[in-house]
Length: 226
Ligand SMILES: Cc1cc2nc3c(=O)[nH]c(=O)nc-3n(C[C@H](O)[C@H](O)[C@H](O)COP(=O)(O)OP(=O)(O)OC[C@H]3O[C@@H](n4cnc5c(N)ncnc54)[C@H](O)[C@@H]3O)c2cc1C
Image (tube, rainbow, N blue to C red; front, side, top):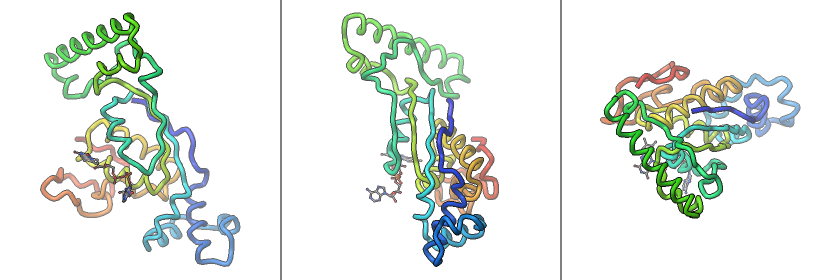
């Protein structure tokens, strides 16, 4: 899996803080931005429930080598924009798939997994040779087939996405991707994302009986070990 932050709003912390403060000031955001203290201002404004101010910050990621199982979950996030490699127009002629850690760590399961993948790709190649277009041959391809996707989300949606997908209840592959995305966001916008992650980073776990029981309070930067 490769996750790159390929474009983002410059000075997002200061920009969102100034946008928020401009609602309560006679000065414009461009004037306010010169002297703003983003941590204090954003904490106050977003704490009041004025979450729309962080929608001014937008982040675009290039993600490659993830499975279609992951992207099927990802595209359920409706307040985001996606551009995904097409299986209609791009022939996946070589075997290219994700191996889950549980399979990788079990030699018997891994052998069987690889055998089935080989059978699938042999059949895919045969259909292609028989003149079947990729858009129809792709019906054979598995959930584990790799794909590339470009994701754009604003900061408000990203905070929501991280709260769901950095949680240990999320499926492992999308959680690995979300953790990498969060690290990249913290690197460029530490105020907005400093407290991001699953709800247990900020308070009690809302999962009840389904909780993993391993609160990450105060440790939003740690990649979970489960
Ligand atoms: C651990 C886990 C298990 C899951 N299991 C399943 C499963 O078994 N089956 C399944 O189908 N899905 C499952 N999902 C997907 C889940 O139901 C959501 O579709 C997905 O997480 C997107 O979340 P969202 O709708 O909150 O976010 P987004 O689509 O990103 O939307 C963000 C927010 O915008 C608002 N919003 C967006 N659209 C609307 C709307 N139309 N009306 C009102 N408000 C809106 C909501 O406040 C929403 O929270 C699972 C998700 C997780 C994290």
